Length: 443
Image (cartoon, rainbow, N blue to C red):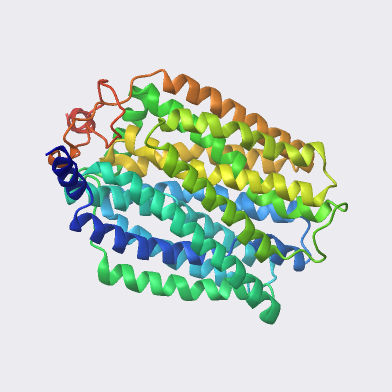
């Protein structure tokens, strides 16, 4: 009888509706992931091949992040009202325009391309996740299956990234550094068509104005210290990881001992990174049933700091630095789905996109400040290690706070704004109700 009950529980969690939603989400998301990944391994090298200095290249990244902060945050937040599917489509269109700008070596055109890329990047990192979780609510699916979708999206996304690393290397050999960006346009076009035909539109709260969305989201953040700590830890982690993402290319280029190859095969190195990233995803899958994500991220922060310290300790040993960067990718693969669970645990759904973009503000400010000073690579990686350490402190404080309450039978419970989805290990805690805040705003 107990085994029959367990089978029924599994059947209710991983229902046909769940499998259908997971399938259509993964197809759209993986197409966008392919397009995005194709642009990652050769973005720095293509600017370098145009004759721009490291400070000029960092300036392009600053423009992209300033755009994400000043424009992307507002536009992506409007998706709560006007639709997350529309935002995902706009993400593809903006990436296509940005890729086309790389056909020109003119500074201001490349700068405009990065400005557009910043807005698209804001959509990419918030709206696919927001669309998925809203669909869970609209379809009244059992939230116990959400970790599996997050894990699968990261694992399959990493497999796609590995494949696109090889693809980027191949097309570069035949057509030059611009080829991966042109190839990415094909994937984004297919993604746009697919989402238009298959995905349904969903929203946060359509009845409140955009200004009310911004205000109510701010009220939620101000009223819940757990969201503040989550936001600070996320901002610090993401800043450190993005700095690593920008600087891994020049770091390997400047290391002249224990060399790997000359010239460096950036596409193959990127594929190697993503292989370790996928291994990290499997580690997450084994740990998620046993360890709270707050504690799990604290654990993986230790090898992450070690990996980021390698360029400081042995700045000229290219192969050893590569091993350190592979360690960073391993930890990143475990971190991404873990932080996804924290979002679903702490952030109310109806203003999820807005809050997620508010959380990105300190991250983007930190990136702009750090890149503006054009520090040496040694100092850059010291700063990255320091930010991971501070993020770990935030998570240590967060783990001692009681998470939001979640009813036992999630399959029969609609996920309300007052009850964000959460894993089973949660304990009871009062929850901020966005609807009440909106009512007060109207008064």
